[in-house]
Amino acid sequence: MNEPSEQSKKLMKYFFIALVVMTIINTIIIPAATRKKVTEVSYSQFKGFLAERQVSEVFIDTSENKIVFATGRGPGGLLYQTGMVNDPALIPMHEDANENYSAPIQEQTSLLTTFIVSWVLPILFFFLIGRLLSRQLQKHMGGGMSAMQLGKSNARIYVQNKTGITFEDVAGQEEAKEALKEVVDFLHTPKKYEEIGAQMPKGVLLVGPPGTGKTLLAKAIAGEAGVPFFSISGSEFVEMFVGMGAAKIRDLFKTAEEKAPCIVFIDEIDTIGKKRESTGIGGGNDEREQTLNQLLAEMDGFDSKKGVVLLAATNRPEILDPALTRPGRFDRRIPVELPDLQGRTDILKVHIKKVKTDPGIDLHHVAKAAAGTSGADLANIINEAALRAVRDNRKRVSQRDLEESIEVVLAGYEKKNAVLNEKEKLIVAYHEIGHALVAAKQKDSAPVHKITIIPRTSGALGFTMQVDEDERFLMSKEDLENKIATITGGRAAEEVVFKSITTGATNDIEKATQIARAMITRFGMSEEFGMVAFERDSNPYLGGQMVSTCSAETNAKIDKMTVDLVEEQYLKAKNILAENITKLHELAKNLYERETLTGEEFMEILNAPIKPAAITAE
Ligand code: ADP
Ligand code: MG
Ligand code: ZN
Image (cartoon, rainbow, N blue to C red; front, top):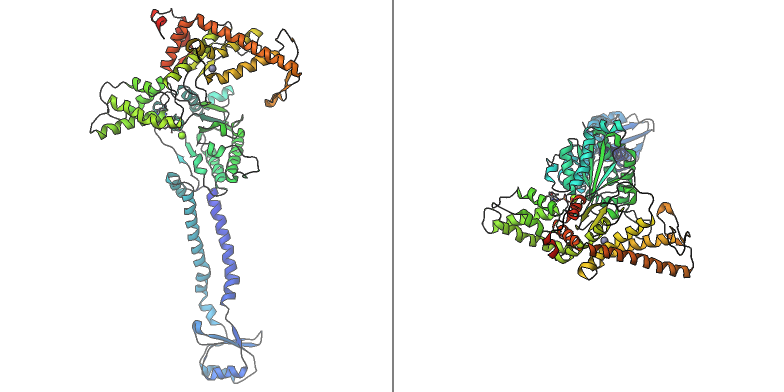
């Protein structure tokens, strides 16, 4: 019934040790402790005892030529010994004294009691202590379900999830769902993938801010996949006995392989997957490191062909040990970002079903006011609204309840996270449209794929994603100049529209500078220097630093040329935006309201005939 698990092996070991201890106690310690002191007496004294009828037992030891006798009975009795004398009067005296003599009868009669006392009772004792210890262990390994599971079979330290949550319950997050559906599909019909020779990624990492539904997505997979789902949280590994973490991981993978196809989900993997510290100050956390090493080893050892998909979630991907995220480990990363306006509306729709509401609730309006919130916050808003209704003795949640509770939730939220205020949001919208518009108005630029002003996990306040139709290996001088223009387009839009500039372009400035400098120092694209390299990569495979190989004088020149090059493109970007100012306003307004624009939506607005109303906007 019970598979021989790590746990039962531990107990076996324990019992073995207990057995050894008992043997030592029984054969050495107890005899030594209970051996009565034997007093040496003379034969005449012995006869005196006999005469006084004090002797209860006599043992004649012919091999050692001595007589051992006891006075009194039970524990109060004393032991004596005396040398054997050939005394014919001895036997009648014994008979007369009416005591036992010759063989040590006492030993025979108490054989059973001795056995019970020295073997059965200790075994029972150690068994009980063993039980107690293993109970104690379970308590330490995190309570609740898992503890109960452990009690039943020593192997199940994780819960096989029967959540009944499906992808329907996860609103928005379409991209994440799409990617995860593929995983589910693989588990259902691995043949389809095998035939082509496709391999599933070994590990899928869900990355995103807290409360965006990572755990929820994992639970949904458990509901959708129809295969066993083993879930374990990184936090369960905290405060564990030494070696337990590693053992738990080993056990988890062993069970998973037996039960394949199945999914193993490690929530909050950052608690065990933190970067290992190089030895030195602090010494690191051995236990955690052991657990992580075990995880890495197990990941290398198992074969995704067998149908075990490893899923993990974290909101701190940057602190993960690089060994965890390298190819062959968690090599697929699925971003789970904060929801945009549409996403927020959808999430509200999911959660509003749980409460009774007034007719005609406008969730879109609520979603709009709740900019910057996560799915968890939105669920919280609905709950707060319901609580408010109860407080006022109403039977249904009103629109007002919802709107008031946004503030309650957001008030706590703003402390935790940077939430853009309206003005900032507008600036970011113009900034991103600036990038996109400059890109679209230049020849050969990669098409805009997606624009969003939802803050990213990376810390960017918004971003414009361009995707090339086909991969490009060669970039012409013009391409690079256009690229710089696109990068400067964000700042350019800020200046054109608001006549002021912000820190929002920090990253852009870095990138633009890098490209411009590389054009001069590495790509030989300046007229002044031509095909001369002034910099080279110290170690191209490891993304090493640039090593400069030029004189200070040349360096100053390069700096000046870099500045000029970027400046030129910045002017170009500003011109493009000024020429298309109507579209800039229209697009920015759309982005500001919807928070995300797809490439198609962007092009649609850009190519639509100019509406008279838009001209007067802003
Ligand atoms: P994470 O693991 O990313 O920190 P959770 O998955 O624990 O976040 O989300 C917490 C709660 O927030 C969920 O139980 C759910 O009620 C709500 N929630 C979060 N994202 C969504 C979403 N996309 N759709 C519906 N509910 C969501
Ligand atoms: Mg979570
Ligand atoms: Zn930018």
